[in-house]
Amino acid sequence: MKERLKKILSILENSSKPVKGRDLAEILKVSRQVIVQDISVLKTKGYKIYSTREGYILEKKKDVVRKMVAVKHSEDEIYDELLKIVKAGGKVIDVIVEHPLYGEIKGRLDIETMDDISKFMALMESSNATPLLKLSGGVHIHTIEAPNKKIMNDVLDAISKYLLGVEK
Image 1 (cartoon, one colour):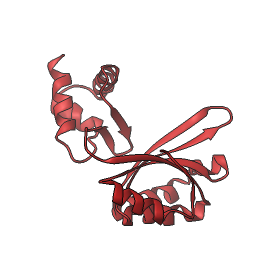
Image 2: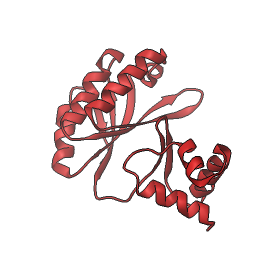
Image 3: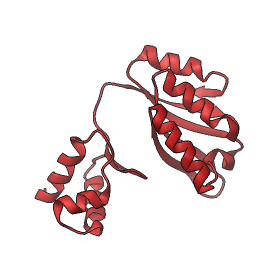
Image 4: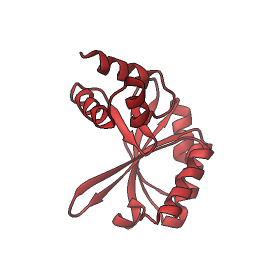
């Protein structure tokens, strides 16, 4: 593996936050486009690297409980849903909706703190973007992580009024 690819992996592995492509480019003294290509190469080698609005994240192996949950609620209830998940100790990894034309549409969220919720809600308002749940009548899927089974059960209890189903 090229030395630069190893350095990118090392930077991502040792970061507790997303790393911006321009920061990687600066550190490695290459263009942003080279970083985009390198990330693509790493993905083809099996590394789970996600691009978020905050930067790149390498999925690290960890002992957590992860479940996909189907939920339904209105746009006005987004904050309440996220708040319940975070307060119970969970992390919202993503949101997925089924679209009649495009099939599955997935958006990376990575919301695990009150600050993350505030940033997301502010971005949703300032961008005037339509939340994905609007494309599916409020029905959507979240991947949720929790440190253990008890906390996952607490999360599921907290959002029970929105739940349609839970992955076994």
